[in-house]
Amino acid sequence: MFCGGAGTTFAGAETRCSAQGMRPVVIDSAQKSAAVLQAILPLYTSPLADAQNSLWLDAHDGETEGTWHWGATGPVFWLGDSTGSVQNDAYVNWASGKPNNSGTGEGEDCAVLHVDNSADPVGTWNDEACDGVHVFFCQAVP
Image 1 (spheres, one colour):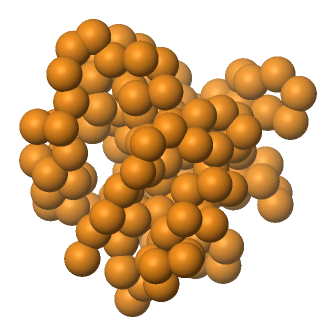
Image 2 (cartoon, rainbow, N blue to C red):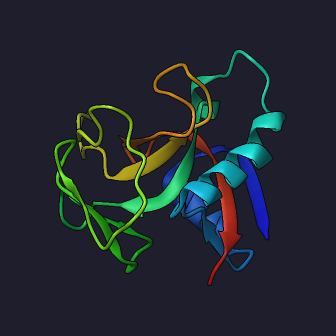
Image 3 (cartoon, rainbow, N blue to C red):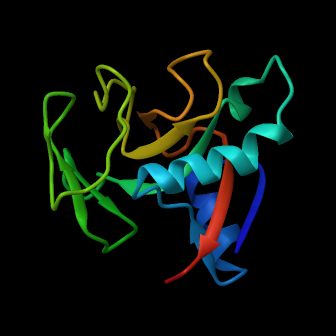
């Protein structure tokens, strides 16, 4: 089961998903990525505002920079920056040169899925500041 919402920060997406017993979406396979894109892309019209061009993933490296994991305590799927490595035979789809932690202030500790080609190709991931504003898609908690 999925649900979604308009642009908000990552904490806002977590709160809104949690209120429905859900979490922000986890993209742990090429098939799931395709399914999420197939569900969400028809909802968009061009051109997209910055807050609409990506959606939050439940992926973080805020606890330890460069250690990317799903959810608050989920499995580690990536170690390092753009030259890092896949962990635990995980599926990853970082855009070229990502993650790069190039944000200002706190850095870029949350991940997004691109839903248009304005920044990086559709379906690729980027690391973003968690206080940015993006749409979100929730999934049932396993």
